[in-house]
Image (tube, rainbow, N blue to C red; front, side):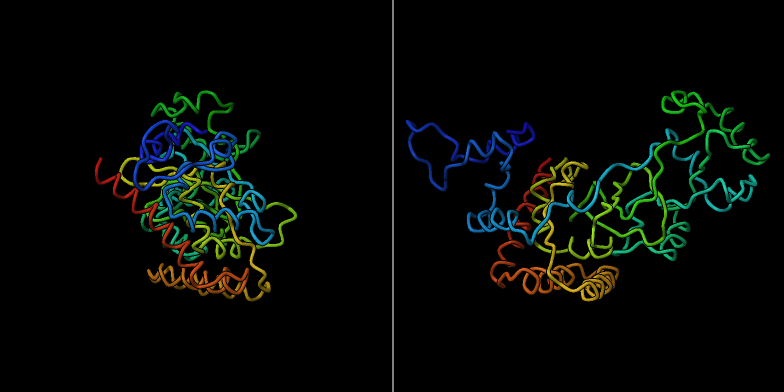
Length: 329
């Protein structure tokens, strides 16, 4: 099984040799499933009923892995974030033309709801969480303001940093994409999936999502589906805990997270997305989760209230466990 699961192995007293004495509160595990990657060790830390429900749900036609809907990757790597990101005042001071600037969100703290809007970008600029990326094509004819700014960077040694000196020209940041959505990869409560309504770009402090060409769901619809107890539990299972109680989720782990592809009408799903966006912006995350369960899990795929409660409590169990580990450390 995966090496990251070894941290949980000491908590599973049920893994024992048959010739040893039985221990209380133990059970058997599927060794073949673990070794073949079909199961995660952490799944055995939640109640059996929740574990069996989760495993059944992830095999249904009514659920998808996120990777079936979108590609998840890292944002661009500048090599010198403070140099390559400018606020509007700096851009004006150096006389950098708009054609060489792309609106960017720099950190997950700027993602307040289910949608990142133009208004969100303007507000985040005020707090330093957003700004402009200096975006220059390799064959671009550099205007005087851009040339002066680059000369200032060379004087500071920016061109000699590891990432920059390996590029030609050093000031051209590669792999800059305008994603359909963003995903936080270091999270306290749960990873945040937010639709990119403003059309901005992002560095590798955020994961970026690009919808598959055949996807019938918009990014804000996927952001709504992401709020259910099923997906929150799946994120806890697929991600891994770090010191301090944080949850980290890599692109390949994110693509494995289970999302309920609710059998809701397109308009109903977008209406739900707007409602959840408003709730989350107001700080009522718990109600947003309940509403997502009601519309997506109950009405969409037919789960009962007890099923939803079972999934929610299992997710809370894993989240509280990593919080407690963070406190202990």
